[in-house]
Length: 89
Image (cartoon, rainbow, N blue to C red; front, side):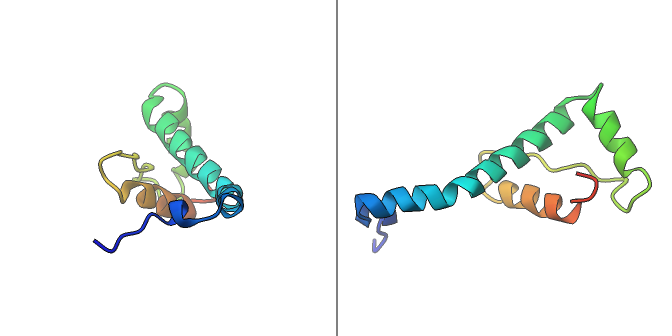
C-alpha cells in the first residue's frame, strides 16, 4: 500500500539515464561479490595467498564475508569489508 515502482513511473529517457548512472555501481558490486567468492572457494590458490597478504595486518584472523542471496545485508557486509580492508584487497 502506497509503494510505487519508481522505474515504472519514469519516462523512457529517464529510465535509460538511471540505468546508465547505476551501471558503475552494479559493476562494482559484481566485482566485489566475485572476488569474495573466488577467495573463499579457492582453498589451494587464492585463500592461502589472501592469508599471506593479511598475515601482518590487523585483519589476519578475518576473511571476506560471503554474499548470501537470502540475506539482504550480506552485500552491505561485503562492501563494508572491502572498504575496511582496501589495502590488502
